[in-house]
Every structure is written in structure tokens, then in C-alpha cells.
Image (cartoon, rainbow, N blue to C red; front, side, top):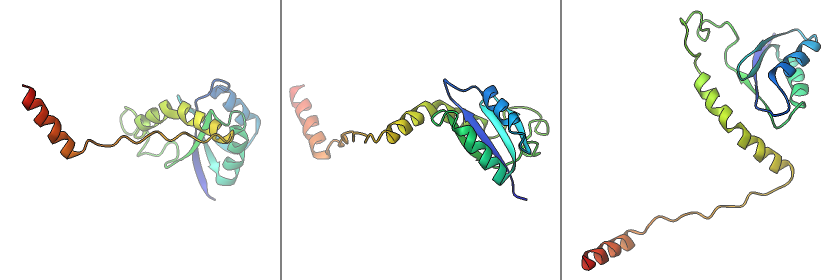
Length: 142
């Protein structure tokens, strides 16, 4: 059996982690559910978890982000109980990712509307010869 854990990171104005947890429990699926500060972790057989989270994502496609977790809950390497407390490895990266999710959601909305981003003009570096010229001019004026 292929058991996986997926993290459901919720950065939504419409959906709360508790809404997702209730929906998961209502499904009666054979999965383990854990609410976290960023959303929910769901562990179980890959086919079940993927199907379940596909329906969860429909609650807010631009505010619910899902990624697979490398270790299952309770894994001694990741578990704070066996590591004597502190943030679990990866927490700070997830915290940083969470801050940019509104920008990603905005880009996904624009992409779905067919909007093409405007290319920003590329700033060119100052030519070395031009810099030398500026330095000579400033020496002359002093």
C-alpha cells in the first residue's frame, strides 16, 4: 500500500482550516487528519488522499494549496517530541512560502482569465566606459 501525507495550506478569505477538517471528516474516508497552524495534514492511501483533496481544493481553488510531505506524522526525525521541542524542520520554509501565497493566487486567477503579464523593461547595467567618462567629468568639475 502506497501511504502518503499531504499538507493542505490554507490561505483563503473564504475557507477556514476548520471548514476543511469538517469536510474531511464528513467524507468518512480512511485517512488520518491533523489540523495545523497553516491548514491540515492528511495521511492515507495515495488514491484516497488524492481524490479527497481534489474535492477539497474545489472549495477555494485560489486559496487552498496542496503539497506532499516527505515524512509521515510521528516520524521520529521530524517529531518535536523526540527532537526535544522547537520548530520542526521545514516549518520556517513553510512560513515563508505562506507569505507569498496571495501573490501566487493572484497570478493563478490572472492566468485563468487569460491575462498575459506585461514584460517589465530590463534595466541595463552601466557601461564601464560610460562610468569612466562620468568619473573624469566629476574630477574636472572639482
